Length: 226
Image (cartoon, rainbow, N blue to C red; front, side, top):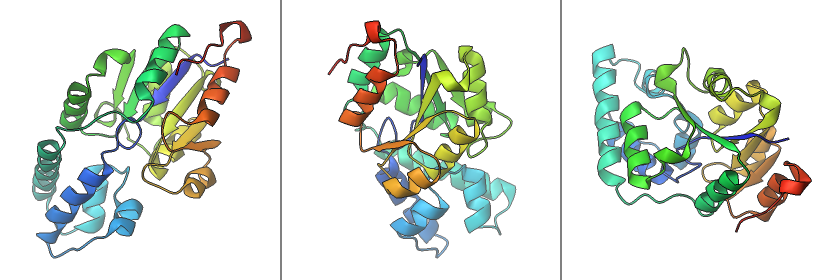
């Protein structure tokens, strides 16, 4: 029986990747590195900033890499004031409240970004716990953030479902043995399914999602809110 939903943030609750892509593109052009969307999806999306910068700009010192990351995220926040949740997200939250389903946020987003987005979207109060990569011994694709979330909620992996959009996020959730649904805002469905997602959806209005959710709780409790 489903007792908790674990949400990623970037690309799952809110489609931030177009803004992140432009910010990375502009920042990297300062170093004569030109990227396209394919490069962004394969080398940047879902990864932690230190790993990205070490991969693409290995010559930067630790201090230079930290400043690059800070400047890039400041650029993102400056351009992200118009963000809105994915279609169907608020309806899903209402459903979880009605069914007494716990909710956790599990994100690789830097702390300032996570706090900014939660404030802009007005959704911080929806989560019973929030797990940031900054607070864990390792971020996604390591399963540690998801294991921490399960521990904080006091549940087993089999009683939860994770919602993720990136390969690193899918890998982390699956490695934590959590049934995982892929959100196709940033990657093709086949890529997410190949990594272990048992279902893919474009947003939270997807009928397959609601049918699965309704079947995952006790029959006498099943009430779909749309």
